[in-house]
Image 1 (cartoon, helix red, strand yellow):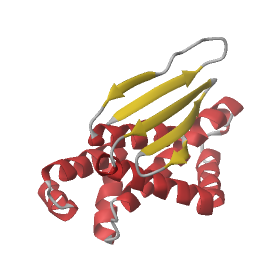
Image 2 (cartoon, rainbow, N blue to C red):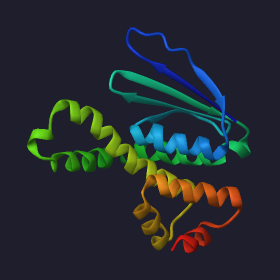
Image 3 (cartoon, rainbow, N blue to C red):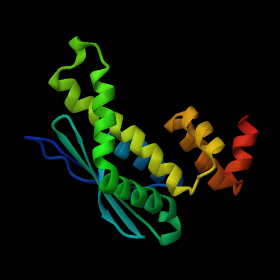
Length: 175
């Protein structure tokens, strides 16, 4: 499958870059780097997913393309993220704002708000979409995966996919 990255930077021409990636690499880049930085889904089909992520003055447009089989997890996670942001966006923003307001007053400045809030929201919504994309509903599994953090949960879930081991078995192996 392929991923195309296109960064738009004021006053600079940045041509798109396309490279071949594995389904696991595609899922990691979607959850960790696009959704995790506050990106949102702009296009969604079973063979093509696009996101737009704003980081400071740069806008990143990322598109993953592949067969339905290759795109299965990327599609499912992106679909769940889009649904979450459509139906629960106000709650997500409220929780992120509450977390921001817990910062010391000297840190509650506009620059931090515009850079940190999307990332706080993105990490939370990325994890929720990841768990939903894997149809994980068992509360013990959810606790363990959330407790691991996004990066470790992604590693465990993609390893389970690549080896054909169930999520339950993989969690049991790591304790």
